[in-house]
Image (cartoon, rainbow, N blue to C red):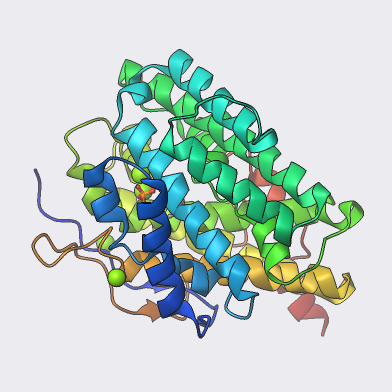
Length: 358
Ligand code: 3E9
Ligand code: MG
Ligand code: MG
Ligand code: MG
Ligand code: MG
Ligand code: MG
């Protein structure tokens, strides 16, 4: 292994926030994982120390406590799937069998009464999550949550085909896959449930609102790829990460790939903030709340990412920062040269142009 990567402070213009009941939620989530026996004993033993309840409390700092708890249990469950089945399990190398298993889980989410996977802890946990989604969300939000699970599952099957072949996708394919396999889109219905509103389809599906959502997913997953590089590069199995993609695609060293990944996420962060301001000016109060929640999701993932023992432990410390910076390393407003997302830059008025006209 080469010299350790040193991650510098990362740019964030979003202030930190946390729900006052974060400690209680964190304890309850560990208890939920034990009740439903999520993951192997070994995996569960790790997950319950990773402050996943605290992460959820950062995503919904003023949300309804029951939904903060629901989100925390759901994120822990997602790691049960993502670590347990995909990255560390047998199915992660067998995309066809993984697709079959995930379809059965989807059926349980849709029809919890169906008598299938009856001795499967992840299915039992999912039945419980579905009951609580029905309690705190609308019928439409429950349906969108299941659809989002399907898109997350679809993407991890794509990822599994690369794992089986030992291949690294190109940057465009990786970017598209990462919009879904970071499981960010499955969290979105819970942003609405947390504050007890439902975004109307004409606002949620508006191209610019969908783009803002995708930008949040990009930033959260690029940040994860930066902060989890230490954990992932040490894993004995296959691993996939934006830095690894950039190293391969552009013939870069890890340090150079890190600089490029940081400049990419800085440019998307600036665009996200501009688009958020622009949409907030015209949108409903619900849309403003939703956009604020996307920002909390981004910042929450950053604060959790630099503190959780998931990414750095005292016995194997990662060189990740303990603070953030308030300026970007790259303030270009040119589109990234990634075809699946470069259209994002067409949606928002250029602040440079605006500044010249005031
Ligand atoms: C995937 O990325 C991480 C998700 C499946 C875990 C669930 C977390 C969320 C839904 C919130 C989004 C947070 C992120 C992306 C950290 P990956 O690289 O497998 O995560 P890892 O923790 O192993 O680096
Ligand atoms: Mg802890
Ligand atoms: Mg993963
Ligand atoms: Mg992972
Ligand atoms: Mg990661
Ligand atoms: Mg450097």
